[in-house]
Length: 217
Image 1 (cartoon, rainbow, N blue to C red):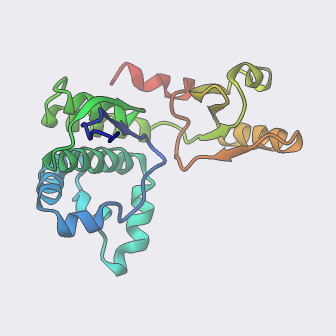
Image 2: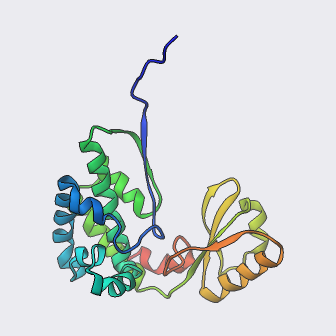
């Protein structure tokens, strides 16, 4: 017997905030013209809204590395940066003949999936992401904590300032809230031996701390 090679269906999965770092995609930008052209186009479209060339943050020179690392932590740059790299990477894969049968995304990643699916034009998606990031940046800072527990077991630890921001699997959730409340919650979980890890985010996304931006957005 022999195994026939058939094209398996491929799913593109796009992450949200917390996956970013200065220099992400730098090698592809240098070596892959499809990727580079898309990043260039997106950066130029975003420049009026950001008042910044995103390429200086994404691909900093050695002497600008610290500045770029600080800037990419700022939500107003983080979200557009993630969108651009994810979108360009997907287009690169598709140029190689890898076509998605389905797509799924979290937060910013949802916008990438929607744009690739034709729900939004690229120009509109970039405007939306830039405005979304600007509005979120204007909110009070907060924290997010990944907790290795089922949702039902986390509820007793919550109060009105803390919210379940995401249920990533039956045994893994994310809680969001003010810095000090998340610090206290992390300590409580540590005391009872529950694994909990802070995410690299500037705000308490997907919680009531974002409510004030909904109207303007």
